[in-house]
Length: 343
Image 1 (cartoon, rainbow, N blue to C red):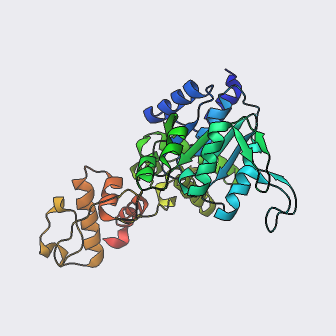
Image 2 (cartoon, rainbow, N blue to C red; image 1 turned 45 degrees about the horizontal axis):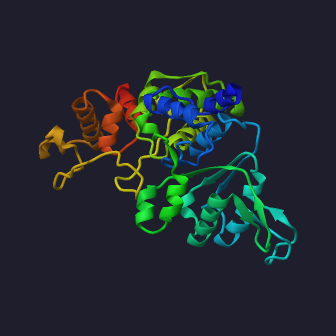
Image 3 (tube, rainbow, N blue to C red; image 1 turned 120 degrees about the horizontal axis):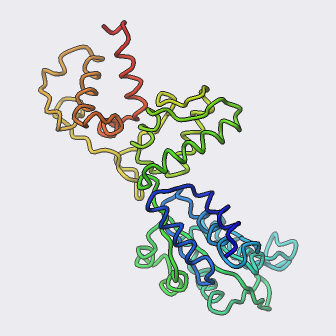
């Protein structure tokens, strides 16, 4: 194996958690194969990075790696983007153009969001997989192309097959080998490892002084569910670096969005609040009587938060999920209650 490019590619996917070690193991095992690979995983988990690592782990790491996003190209243009076209074959075709498949000749052709592909084009892709030949739009001539196919989706491919959006025969042609990218919330300490890496890189880019994460920042980061995965983590660190400065990034500098209880398919719920009739939403473990709320508003807020933190065994991130706010909000409020002006 040509380990140098493999190591460089895998380095882009930092992680020592068991789920990521399994991803690395599979990349090493299947990299040299020419069989099609199907990568699944939520948006933002690094599916294209995984595809690049597989390409680099193969026998032709210096050959082209060409990627297209099937969901980002208009349906009337995607056939041309994949297979190419001849001049005059349609309005706007002012010159002959090779498609992505031809550009990837000798290397790897990566089709991201394969489930977004139109049914008619799925048939042509299936024919290409069966014969290894492509036909440009407007041409009567076929061309032999030598590529390894890797595809990816953030959906459940079997559900897409059952719903009729993904052809079953195409699925089984593509799903010879498979890798599932784990969501960030399942990767444990990888979260803070990635955050620290982003912090140093972004601080250098923004000409800031940050060198490390504080303990409180690590606690906040580890307590969040990260429905946006690595991309969301990057955004959170970027925002903190742009808006603040210092050697240490603290919890108070983090602004983590509170995600709604139900935000559509693919988004995990962060909390499960229970409504007490006529009173604010409070976790049932607190068992607070109505008289508890007969006081100044800030004291109500303080006592609800402190009781929730206590009920959660002192875990601020867990209490934040129950109360529907970001952990950094709780840290800021708890610090403010310790000021003399509040006593």
